[in-house]
Length: 360
Image 1 (cartoon, rainbow, N blue to C red):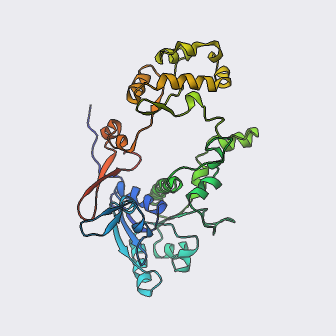
Image 2 (image 1 turned 180 degrees about the vertical axis):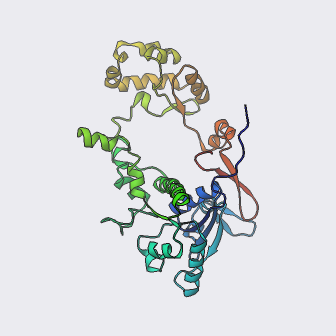
Image 3 (image 1 turned 90 degrees about the vertical axis):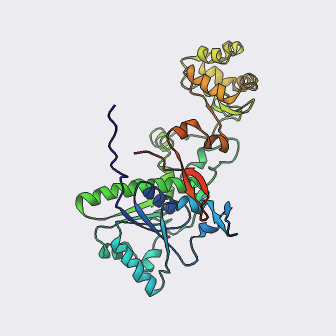
């Protein structure tokens, strides 16, 4: 097989000026840096607040370095500027003129009040791509509202379908809406760069974190708009094959999706009791879900999760397992694809962290 030609990273030579803080903006810049862009992060006076967020690494010097800040800003250069001073404003304007892309996640209108509105940047650099990430976008009645990740999940429609229907809605752990917005912003920035290369004209990319969440609900809104159907949260904690279930050394997801038929699944589990006529149809299995769950738990309580996982795949059943953080870091699948990369702390120690979510 002919080996692919190494053409370098696709964004080599692209200059990015990053005026961001927290997660969504820095993650966008981090992805662009991963794929070759030269990213200069401008921090406000006092530094990015993420520098003080736990967990932190204790350095040899006795100071602490935030793991979140380290992860989000790996591969970037940093500079502190006070945009409110004449000197800081002029220096930032010089950087705008030199940049191909500016990524920012100030509140809408805030940069404009500092003399860096889209029109100001476009006048300084007509070919510039400006990527703005905000909670709700650059216009609309919520434009100036404040929000955290849990609010974006809720207003984006995700929380309503997450959890159990007889309990309150849930949200994802960690700032997943922020990371999703950063990923969407990076993809949109690359699309705008393509347009810039073709036409020579810049573009203002407007990324709403709320919309990034709502856009992922591929079936919830169409079900309602076309059918009037409202998808609700899971029916029961005793979800049978659709739920996470304990085994001898952890947890498995014994989903029946992908099985050729019910008989295949019961043979794989060596569970003739599941061949009872009550479970012969999908409706029957749903009707008797509690009984089926008890049988399933009994069959799985002595199984080891990796044996169950690999065995299910051999039978054509798409089961899964719940990996601990330690198991995730040691995953043979991720290792084979070079998913983890080394990031150095200020005193030279290495930390393993995920690379970008796709390969080129």
